[in-house]
Image (cartoon, rainbow, N blue to C red):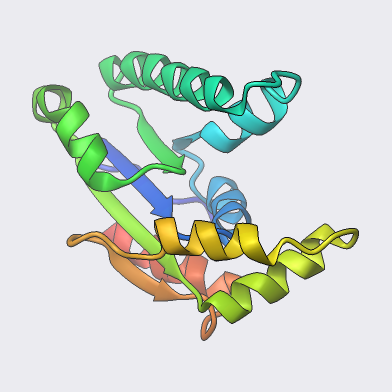
Length: 171
């Protein structure tokens, strides 16, 4: 079912630790949120810039690309769906534009246990297991921000998670 048009433009942010379901959920949200533009930093970093040997440079360039895209979309007052970013950094970096263009910022933290993340990583890798990478990413990104709606992806299916986010965005 297509999503309704918003009175105020909205930035919806989905974040969480590795293997919490961010990519799966944002793909589903992208299908449901017809009036949102999915700005996928992970795609820019991991696909478009995959041939760069310097992963830190790829990370930096992907953030620059996201910033450029967001600048243009904000001027047009377009709704955005973001992944691999956090609301406090968006609110700080884009404070003036958020106010100027009247944006709502809604952030969703997908939580799962380290054990679940490691199992999901094994399932999606199929070739090699990276428990130390999952552990480190979980340690770095495994916390919600103050204004996040926390959704436990250990307990909720992808469909239930997407429906919770859609319901919150409709408010």
